[in-house]
Length: 316
Image (cartoon, rainbow, N blue to C red):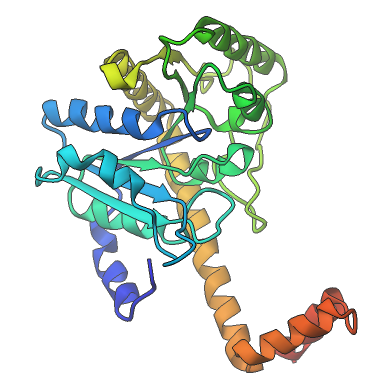
């Protein structure tokens, strides 16, 4: 998470032992009960004898710059289980809800022999779609009583949901939330595109081709009602995840998602290396960057021209 010396070498050494774990992303609005749902899924998978890793991407502490650790506190019942490994990570200002190093931690857990890795994201609405480049199955958690919850899903998360969980389904309005999701899925049948499996350089999901229920690869995201704190519906949610896993295997889409994930990870590393190399060559240390920022802020120079000039120097 802190890019310590030796981390890159360690990741290179474990890479041949990765690629076996099944990655499940759990995302949704703040307050939807994602952590409670993750906790109950871990318990269910452990009862079945499966080894589980959890990556809980927490908000960044304004004081330490590290994760606030709320999720590990809520999942402390699993702390003594040697077959459960929980790691909290800070977002460090990442708008997509995922820390830059999240994929590295998933790789470590994969190499450790975990059967499943659950990645719980911060929950920031429509910008949360980065999880689609990392997970095989994405669970979007909605909850009745949050007026903008389904609206946030409409704004962008719908396209990456493989399973919907309507949590806190004992609340008033749960059936209405289910109905609204069903209506959105009905609309998607006539207007949707195949879910994107990779990111472009701008970190934006892109659709690849139109599809319909007649397409063999078509998947209708099931809607599962849960009450995590009472352990209700969690088994149904796990079954829905397994059905989607079987669908990916049967259609070859799991391989496609693995390729998309590899592409996203490679591009992220490439961007990081290129930027670091550019800053080194330009001598753009903290003080120099501050000078550039000050010139831009005072309107002495515009950022577009400066970026073009620096890029030209690198290509020279």
